[in-house]
Image 1 (cartoon, rainbow, N blue to C red):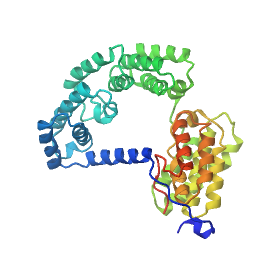
Image 2: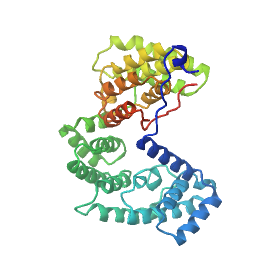
Image 3: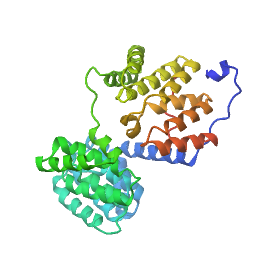
Image 4: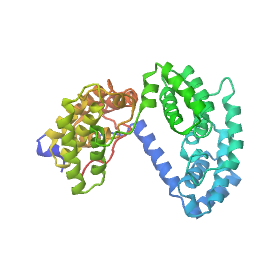
Length: 367
């Protein structure tokens, strides 16, 4: 039973479907349907494409199928050749397609049984020709960089820099920082030296944050917060109990630490997690308190420049329970901290004010 009934509040009309929410649902369903294709269905789509080669939906579904499920039904060599065929067609006809810059459209990922050395040179040639055009669209530059990031980082860097020059407010600084971070650990010494010099001269805070992003040290307060999230994700009473103890320990330790340290990220994550646990206990007052505490966590680079998936489950539960004003206040306050998520946070607040579902609703709330 929803808390609003027990608190005597008047029922709130359900949120209506926003265009953004409908588009996100459609995209999720499409991705799931592609990955869930069976062999007979995939072969039906292949036969259909032989007669209707311009069916973009069918090609994307097959690319999702081959990348995510193909080796259940075919030898890797067959899947590699089939995927290469569709990737080449899509690059020729729809090079701006987001899927081409994601795992299903990449063929040179390390430790990947679907890596395609034979097709790599051919596909690289196509991307280089498209990206070399003076009017190459930003999505094309981004997709070309994504394709090259594993094996030709200097070229990937070149295209990301071009995109950033044309679109300084876009995601290119963060992507360049992530490329640099990987280059410092898995590339030639000469290029790593170049990266160190580029980083030393950089002033873009988003780029720098992505370069220096690291795994929390064992035993640190950040590691404790992440372990609490892992324990919660187990979805059983023992995991919830462990998560609560760890998160409470974070909230005890964090206030005594330097506010400029990464303790602010740990405190934010712990408060959001404790809010979720309070929601599971049907304790609205405590859930709202932890939400408010999370909004006041000291600002860190992680909170500013990296996604925080722990944010949306609690917000979704509170929205489902009719608690709109508090969620809006949180979204607008956290938008002042989060650079990477600011646009979505503010868009979400605006949609909720209009009585519409934000794009992330509903992340599964606690039962």
